[in-house]
Image (cartoon, rainbow, N blue to C red):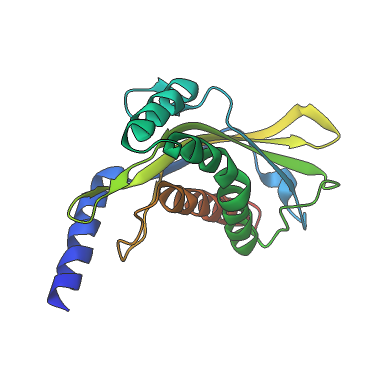
Length: 197
């Protein structure tokens, strides 16, 4: 029991330097007042990986090579999971937490407004049991009129949305990043709820 408490305390201290920041940088969320739903779209164009800002394509090729050197075919499995996780894990988790905290549906293609979530940076983190580093994402969120996407009503930036599990069972990259998208959905949902009261 003491070991578990110590581990959780250590995790909390190590996360202190990873505080998430969310900020409205343009426009206003006021037009969303009274809306029961929004459409959500996700983009990953020109995404950078890690603190060294490696382009995504370069990162994937390097990681595939590393994994294939350990076990033939493992690199292809990694690449398939890297893209599949977006639709299977990240986006559903974002939508679920966004809907819960904004009290708006997030899967309505006919909604008046569309929220475009653009991931600009991904830190995959790691967890090898005795040592770990949380995953996180940075993103730009643009809210536009669905019928006229050039009409932007607000822009939001998110820095270091953390992805980790408190009990330390986040050994898989996809699991860690899923939590980062869940955290982003929660915080954006809360921000919209607060700004549209």
